[in-house]
Length: 89
Image (cartoon, rainbow, N blue to C red; front, side, top):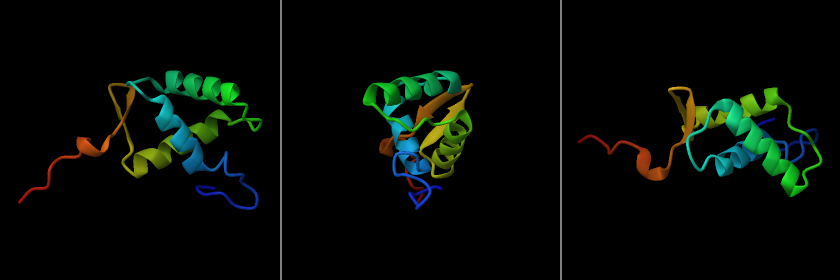
């Protein structure tokens, strides 16, 4: 489910969908805006397999669990490598 399996094609694995979400979040967006951007992008790229909203939310959960996205003030933002706090000594 998180990675491709016999039953989950690579373009529908949660990490793949998560990567597609991150590509679309070039600026903070609401969940609805991110969903619309992903749907539009996938349609423009010719993806045949639809991604249901529930699968989109699971991909967001994975991204949040690995620290790739944050939700603050109802806006999704991508955490870039330089966004982490410097280590305390």
